[in-house]
Length: 559
Image (cartoon, rainbow, N blue to C red; front, side, top):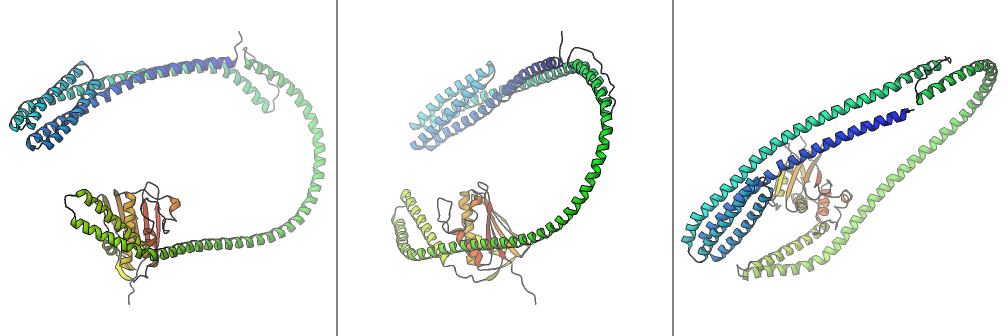
């Protein structure tokens, strides 16, 4: 029977795949057994131990509620404690149900059942004591709680300790089983893999040895033929494709030897013709080189002129780009000034009209707070809400007026650290906000107006507190840059800012918050720029924001 190389390789490959599949199936089955053992070892005992500890805590808490009932002497307090006891008891029963489902072995389930029975017995004792307390027999209720109740609690704690100890023992036994299963799995997988490797090597060596020997004979013959020796003969043996290749090679070698003899004669004839043609080509080449030299000189002159024109065009495009950037900056500044003009006219018209009614509301709130009964807490809360809203509206009016009527600063010399410490005293920072102050150790002098800088610092702090919703960390840092500027940074851990809003956050009336009208940062930018400074913002969404103020450093001149 004639079997080709393809059939040999295919059969060997199928055999290797079959052995590999068997190895994978054995490994997966062992792995599943290990996984099941791990689940039984790590889940059930830990759940039971934790649940038993939680039940012990609940039982102690229930006993504490019983003592509170005896000591309270108030029906309302008794009802509240009874409700709390029922809630904790229901929670303990749910945890016992989990223990009964998760505990391993009949002994563990029997312990869980006895614990549930003791819990019900403790409920009866507790109900009896509660009934006596409600009827006014506190001494008898205290006696029952101290005697029968304490005994039941101790019994429950003892049973829960037994459940915990039993689960711990089970966990150790299961861990030992896991160690044995793992060792058995490792040994089985290693032996199976080694067996497959040995069989694969035997199959590969058998197939390769039957093919490489004949391929080596053909390769040697083809190498000699490539070196010019066309009188070659390959070994013809077997009944597969290599046999056919060897036969065809021998026929090809015979034909090539005859063709080589004819080609040698033709090469001599063609060499003579090629020499004559080469002489003619050299003559034509010399003529072309002379013409190319003339054309190249003309082309270089035209390229030089084109480069000069291109350079002039590049200068013109650069000037156009500078003009376009300046035009855009001017347009943005005009838009900002137009908004400020509109805000100035708007705030001047309505500030007086709004302050009068807000003053009346504020006076009315004060009068109502003086006249109200101190125990009417709900009405007082609503009045506080109205008062806070009036203060918020007044702040908005003041921000509008500050934005449009900012005076030129009256500059004085201050130490940057002392200035910031003084400004932060007027900021109301909740206790839930962690304030980190990292000031430069070296003395940095600035020339500013304190009240305007205080307003800018307050605006940035309020903005950070609003972004963090009252919970987070606010970091304030100072340093002197290398280019003669003092840098103050305010970093929060709030909601952050989208990069597309970096150029918009300082515009009047721009805000991404549900509350506020977007004036605080505009006022801050105006204050910083009036002090010949700069302000910028950095940050990413949900990763906090960082506002950076840069002010000129004041240098003392020595005589």
